[in-house]
Image (cartoon, rainbow, N blue to C red; front, top):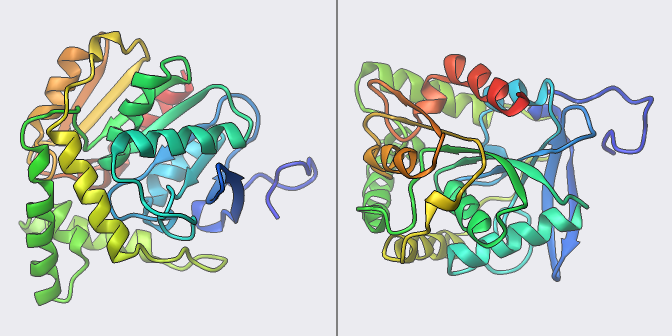
Length: 289
């Protein structure tokens, strides 16, 4: 049971306590979690490559859910959501739209990371009136320089992680200096800690490979006209993102009129997780203005 429809039930504001629900859209059973006070425009979280519901950093989710209705979900073919992973970012955006409409929403705010930011941009390019506010972290624009190299970097770091029996995100998201290693361990611990109910299904290898191919296609695609994006936009990244080069965050900032940009020092792809104490309240304030 979730809090929906029961005014006497206390509001869940802790992500590790958020129950998992299912909704069907276009023949796909999408799994999702929601928390925070219901009512108004929800903040929908768009997750990264090879990630399921369990991969969100509760330090960021909880900060936003304190005052906002938050929804996280698994894309088609990811985690416990049924179906096959789409082979294009645009098809992922179509699935996200179907999921959002199935929940009955005509307007949302978006918090996105990495692949999720690419899906969010494709969604806005096709349906500009759906999204009111946009948070883009660790991501880049369609056709962005070197995005098509993500697959090679990912496979290389997965191999390094396997050799050291580490979580691949420690290599992919964080610098390998002392600060980065400490931040990586803390982040992995936060996202693999105990939940109050059964955890999500793991990402299938076939789906992971399909996502990488979709990112490669996106990196080689015709750029979106970001000058048409009218949503208030917050962009953030670390200054040493090896997966989606940090320069692309600056590129998006220059192309999305009125956008705000934060680049965290001495950090990588997961800069917003390394600096969660600073970033979480900034993101929460931006989304609650």
